[in-house]
Amino acid sequence: MTGLPEAQPVLRRSSGRRAALVIVIVVVVIAVIGLVLWLADGLIRGMAQDGVEDALESKLPGNVTADLEVTIDGGLFLPQLIAGTFDNVTVTSDDAEVDGIPFDIIVTAHGVPLDENDTIDETTAVVTGGEDAANALLVLGGADPHLSLGDGTLSYDQSASFLGFTIGYALVTEPQAQGDSVSLAPVDVTVLTDLGNLDVTSFVSNLLGEKPVTVCVASSLPEGISVDGIDVSPETLTVTLSATDMPRNGPDLSSRGSCDAQ
Image (cartoon, rainbow, N blue to C red):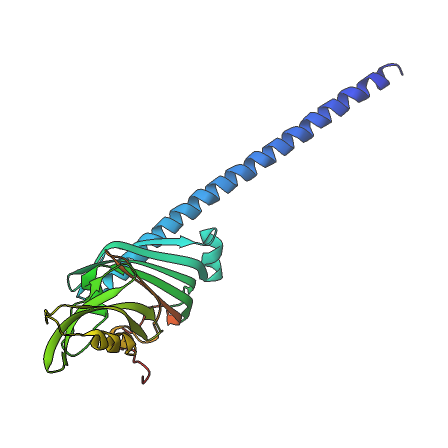
C-alpha cells in the first residue's frame, strides 16, 4: 500500500517524456518532409524554367537573336503544376537583337496555362532600345526622316516651302501611345536654314499649330498587341506593350495588326 502512491508520479513523468519525444519526432519529420518538398519544388522549377528557355529560343524568328532567362513565380511550383496554370511567368533578355538592332525586353505573363491550345490571361512587355530601335518601330513614311531622342521628346529634320524659299527645320515632338499607333505632337521648332532677315515667325507658328503626326505601329507588331506607353530619354526609348488572351504557343508572327482609320 505504501509503494503505490510513490509509483504514480514516476509513471506520469515517463508518459510526459514519451509524449514530448513523440511531438519532437513529429515536428522533425514534418520539417524534413517540408525541406525535401521545398528542395524538390526548387529543382523541378529550375528544370521547367530551363526547358521553357530552350523552347522559346528555338521558336525565335531567324532575324531575332536573344539569350532568354525565364522565371516562374507565384508561390510553390508543384501546386501550380498540378492546377495546370502558372500565376506569373517572366521572360527577360538584356542582349536581344532584331535585324542587328539591339534592345532589352521584359515580358510578364499572368495566368499561363500548361495546355498549348489555351490562352494566357494577360501579357505585358517592356522593350527598351536606342535611336535605331526608335527608327525601326516609328516609320514616318515619305522621306522617313531620322528620329533623335531627347528628354521626353523625339525630334527630326524636315523641310518645307515658305514664300518661295525652301526652309529646313528641326521639329521637336512629344510622343503619346494610342494603342495601335503613336502620336507625335509638335512642341518646338528650330529653323536650320539661314534666310537672313526673312521673318519666319508665321512659318514656325503654323508648324506648331499642326495636328500631331500619327504613326501606325500595329502594322509592325503581331496582331492583338497594344502600345500602352512610350517614354523617351536622351539615350533610350522605352515602349510598353500589352495583350490579353494571347495563345500559349505565342502570337502569330506572320499576322500583323492594323491601325484604325485616322
